[in-house]
Length: 626
Ligand code: ADP
Image 1 (cartoon, helix red, strand yellow):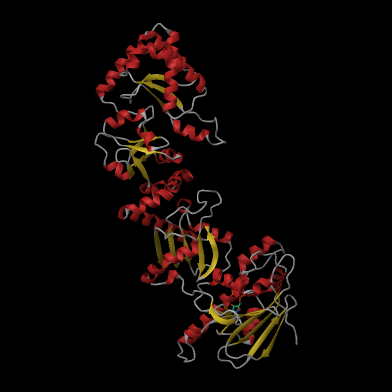
Image 2 (cartoon, rainbow, N blue to C red):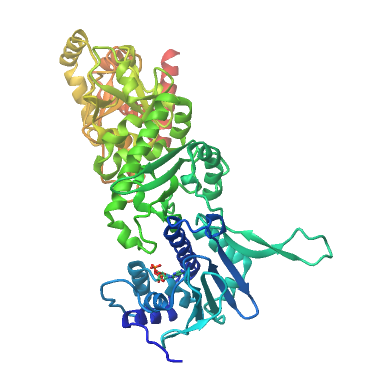
């Protein structure tokens, strides 16, 4: 029989397949099953309108058969089949336009597979020889196409019952690098079908071992449908509600039900379905670099990418789910997807849907939102900060912070709504805990005025607020900011007078601490506490602390510190009485500064020295008493 040559392009590709270094060899089964499914679709669609009684959808199926002994793997379908001419045309060429210009390298393999879709040819990645026995629907004659690779192929008449196609792979012998025998194992085949072809709409049937046999009895076999066939995202709303949670748990390995699901079905410029989930708990390793965000991408129920990162923005990286769109080809590569316009459209749409869902949860089901927030609030705050605040407007209404007044989380909108009329800014305090924040001396006057304070306890918080700058035209203001201005005109006037009277005292104190702070001044915010530290400019004390903890920014940025003294506190009278005793004043000033540092959560450079100075004070005080 005369051998026919493959067309040049196909020959190159075939060569690539045969010597393939492509690492995802297992996709060959997906490709063959997908071709079989197409053939069943074609038969069904082509014949359905003609009212031919022979075809009912229930009888259409895909069958996998294994012959361990002869290392044969067969994938059959009773679809449209191929005539001799069709075999020649479809299996002898790659029906794609454009020239193939590639070298036989690993990168090139991935690239070519991504670009052209190797489909049927992928069979050669695992086989020495491939036979295709096919009988076109309505024809009496079957044909057998056969090839051992590059040399070419033959087509000859043969016998076959019924219409459809059998693709028979003669698997290669195992080598040191590759275990081809695994493709003859029930376990591997099951997994491959589950992973890539679970939602093919026709049953994929295989003869499997039946373990129900009693002891001593011979293990029997039975036919089993390996795929679940119906993708949850195609179910009716009621059925989906029922099945979605189980689907989520199986698919994404979570023990808990998701907090909520988002179901999307769009017909239009791009058509797609999506089923998304918001987990109830932080997935293992979520806040680490190793976490891979992304959604599963399907094309017509066939998995094409396990985690497609471009479908989700970073700030919603916690979302899990699937997207199915017939608009993507089975073999589109990661690189091409990245630039795909349709993918971008889908991603944009999904981003909006997720945001709307969260907004709805926040208004309608606060309890669930609180759960969401405790798991992923940090992610949203990072989202505000990321990309120079590009997403801040989209995310700001989803943020929550702890209110010192209410003792619970509130949104920025809720904060604004509860503001007294005379309040012009949104106040916040930074401490490791809400308790610490509530005891900060800097909060005294703000709270006495009846203004609420947001207590920030996470490192990212203040950075996020700095990026936001304002909410509803109300700027954010730290209670430790030198510019804080909550005094009444009378209080201001009084402070001015005090300042004028105590200029030289304040000057002497500033001189003492010159190397560490910018100035000592009378406080604009204290009521009962004697002293506190505040900062001037963009970098706050808290930000300085966070930046100090990062190796690459250590020592680079410093907050401009100001020591504030409460003129109404008895200590101030003591300080005034030390005029003319520079040594004494110096000691007092240094101790007050150290105390302000401690209250602000800083550690002292020399705690032993600090302790000794306190002891000395205590001893002198006792002596003076006697
Ligand atoms: P693609 O499926 O992307 O078109 P393939 O190389 O996988 O490319 O297949 C080439 C063509 O061979 C198919 O388009 C189809 O016409 C034909 N073909 C492959 N497998 C079958 C099958 N099981 N039944 C009928 N036709 C098939």
